[in-house]
Image (tube, rainbow, N blue to C red; front, side, top):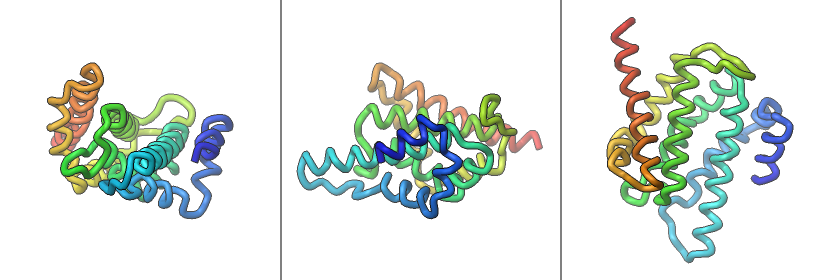
Length: 181
């Protein structure tokens, strides 16, 4: 996974990487690998690393990806995968402030880019249908309630609360955009 991360980062090869059959599906599966199962500290830490590296690979594909890459990510349930990274209810997801903050930050960036487009390489126009599908995935995962709970979390020097507010605003803006049509 670290090698894959480095390939994406060093060579900006997200396009080639996303072409690997079933890679996105495999990375998405690894993000949820044995969630909520605790055996011992060493095994748990290894699982946390695998999940974190898998999320990072998906994030880099999203970050460096073009319109087609965004579509592939949404089709593979990237909104759902991102939700898991900050959902802590019932031990469902990660319970570490760093992962919660990053999960909220990533989902905020992803939704913003889908709604507004990206003005740097690779450039793409707004993708409102993909944004809506991602928001539906987030809602289906039950993450909206978790976002509200995280809005009270002062962990990580208040960054979690701030990021949760940004995500909530992004999702609420969906309803405002819908009324304008």
